[in-house]
Amino acid sequence: MTISMYQVSIPRFVHMLNNLAVILDRAQAYAEAKKIDAATLPSARLYPDMLPLTSQVRIACDTAKRAAALLAGVDNPVYEDNETTLSELKARVERTIGFLNTIRAAQVDGTENREIVVKVGGKDTPFKGMQFLLARAIPNFYFHVTTAYDILRHNGLDVGKKDFLGNTTAS
Amino acid sequence: MTISMYQVSIPRFVHMLNNLAVILDRAQAYAEAKKIDAATLPSARLYPDMLPLTSQVRIACDTAKRAAALLAGVDNPVYEDNETTLSELKARVERTIGFLNTIRAAQVDGTENREIVVKVGGKDTPFKGMQFLLARAIPNFYFHVTTAYDILRHNGLDVGKKDFLGNTTAS
Image (cartoon, rainbow over all chains, first blue to last red; front, side):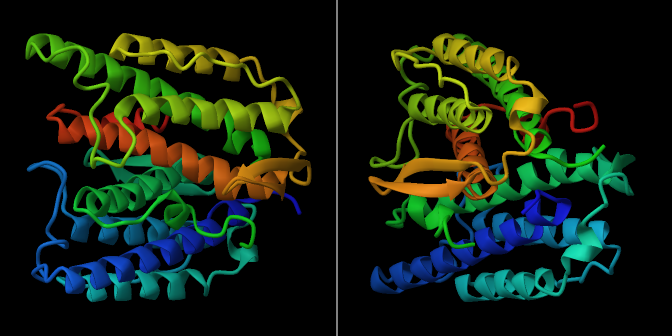
């Protein structure tokens, strides 16, 4: 096995999003057991001007699907951003996994030098594919998955880093 | 440029640790301006049974240096874990960057199938180099850098995601 643009991106996004789906299920069970209002955890945030859980999950999904679409050269599916509950957020995560699983290694491998233009600070900014993936997409993706986890931990959900990492030997 | 085990690891760890050093400087200036006791931010945590900022920064450093050492086949420098202030934590980050910068691409490239054994849940667990890097080291690294950031944001530090990501076009 040789490392490649595909290996570094699609399977890792899918793996982490599967872990996030499990954590959202745990949050749902926790909210039901503790009779926490359904809107409380989705709107929870770590500081008043930080984004709430809903946005953290949305952006984690968006970062993964946009990176996949830009690298593979396929349309980036448009979502409505209308989730308000944990189960709707989980559905977005699963929909994103479904899209990522349509991407084949041959579509992403060899895109190190593909020209990609994304907004940075509101300005169209050109990137090579590898720089975009390693310096923007991956850090951004992990930022939002981790912050979703941190918001839920801060609100008392009993999960640990093994839930965040998932089964690291299997996939 | 072709993606490689080195490209995916050492330069990205260095880049994110440089960003973390800047954020720790900002935290130091914030603590001084607000007359926050020097022990408050290093011991801050998001939940009573989560690790404090000090541990998040230590583990971010440790994850990067251990991955570098295991992949490159060099000794993993031992640190004393005695930091109690923001400036000591920043020094640990800078020391780690210094170590990472001693690692050459030729030492890490081609280690996809290197046998690596690490403890998982207390048990020695074998990994191939690529699986170890992509499934354990990188998610773990970003988890702790992000959680350090989240702890500081939760405590009122005025930083944003551009500080977390740093200059994504330059390095």
